[in-house]
Length: 145
Image (cartoon, rainbow, N blue to C red; front, side):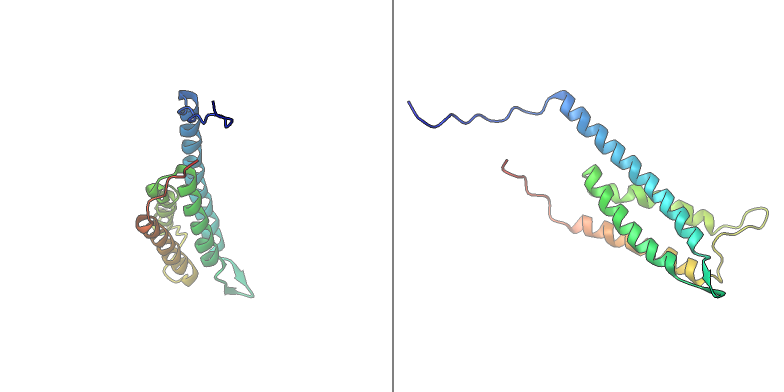
């Protein structure tokens, strides 16, 4: 007879726990998609911001910061390396739509707006770097809890 209590292994997660985990991952993925859409719209609105008649590059900084945050959030929420594509896809779609002239002649990002062009390049490069980092990251080490 031992004085130390016997250690028992934790029971495997039940079905309800797995469903809750899946629901939270799906919700996190949807939030990442919504975040990619909202930040793209915000960046497009800020691309024409002027101070004293001169364009300022605040949308470039917003694109870099928001895309880093969205990429990190998507990976953490979904738990998969490919999750960076969730916010990147609507962002790229909106940037492509903004660069195409409508039948009425409207154009959100024109070729003479250096801020808009820099924003698209900086945002795309940010998503590319974050995705590449996820691909090269070592696999997570399982904790011994």
